[in-house]
Amino acid sequence: MALKISDKSLFVRLLRAPWWVSFAVAAIVTAGMFALLPKDLKAGAILSGIPFVVIGVMAAWRQRGTLSPKQIEDALQKLAAMTAREFTDALAAAYERDGYKVERFTKPGADLAIEKQGYTTLVSCKRWKAANHGVEPLRELLAAMEKAETGRGIYVALNSVSDAAAQFAEKNGIRILVSDELATFIR
Image (cartoon, rainbow, N blue to C red; front, side, top):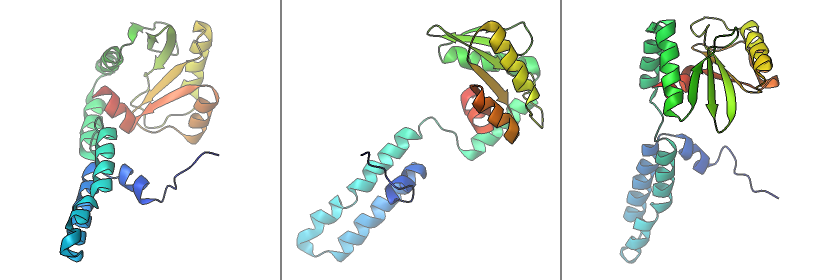
């Protein structure tokens, strides 16, 4: 039987919070215990904050590559200001930085073909600036995937996709790269 930690536990909440919150809790717990415990137990007061310091270190490690909400907003504004060619070039550069071999895909339905470890993935970013993303561009990507005989596809969008499009993508093995994740990836 696998042990599962509740999403409401203090540990999980501190891991999701900014890393500095755990260090603040550690300082408060240590100061409170130091003030409340008798003189001969002051060493225990100092040790009482260690679990929170460990959680803070874990949270900092997990959050090391993430952007702040302000940085994400700025990145999304910069992406929205790009032309289609600039955006495709930036996306290709981001995939190359991650170790992919990138080629322009000249057939309909996709813009890039990326390859890593022998697996090819088609990337569609033609409609990345659209306000609404429905199922139709995902069908085009799926058709291109079938013609290229690859079971992997990525649809890139600046704004969120419709629920029907998200369900279609999940059903057909298409990953959707959207807003916050897109800003973090391309930065």
